[in-house]
Image 1 (cartoon, rainbow, N blue to C red):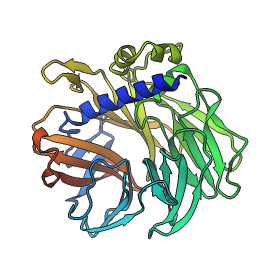
Image 2 (image 1 turned 180 degrees about the vertical axis):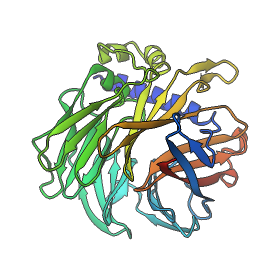
Image 3 (image 1 turned 45 degrees about the horizontal axis):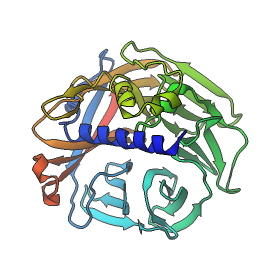
Length: 372
């Protein structure tokens, strides 16, 4: 695919996302959120604001949560660490192109006592101890990466740079090379929708690796022991994705054609493991153009969580939240830990106060998913 066209589309995707970010009052979350069919409950168990006296969080690229009192934020300047209910702050790494410096860090993951950071600018993977100790770096990657998960000596990369072949590629940390067996069939719709920022995803538990494409409401599960793959297919009449016959052709037509498709498609955003559940997060519904503000409006757009029983991979229930206009400007991001869904938001009183750092408020909300 032509790099100039791709950069243009990526720029468009980013501009649409920014428009959405600065027009929302976030999902309408309550203390106790009942699922669509009343089988599950998403309950707020804790919430607090972050102290921002030394470092500017701005809009973090990724969030990692070990527990309610241990938060890791990946920013352009490195990793910010909060404890003591958002009061204590530490910083690992710095901006640059040297060893353990970051030019464009995008993904933060953990495995046991180690942190792994993917730097898209340098196409390198850095391994740190949780105290910030510099362990190792892995380079010579040819492609962009959308996501990854670490399982012992193996990193399962979700490759977003390829437009042919497989897109799930296991990588040996010991040998510092990709392994022979790969997974994930690229279709034309996937090729187009992967451009959408942070779409699709991959996660793992002790026995399996799970991954999802942005274009399909399916869960792929890889057995770590024998490498065999299963696909669990699900249907939702509101999860609507247009059939794309030629992604290159759509992109060659420019921003207008891509915008038209993006405004009227559902996208699977990520997958996570929470207790005995497998959780998918998707954007569903259509965007409409807001003539008053001059950007695509998310008024009819929704966020839907699909909750599956991890033991038998059957769909238990869903949660649906609406994006709505509000008085306050807000940026928000979801994350997960072993037991909790985590909702982070950066809020300003008005658009005029965005440039004034002191007006920003950073809050973290912890939700427990449980049977009602």
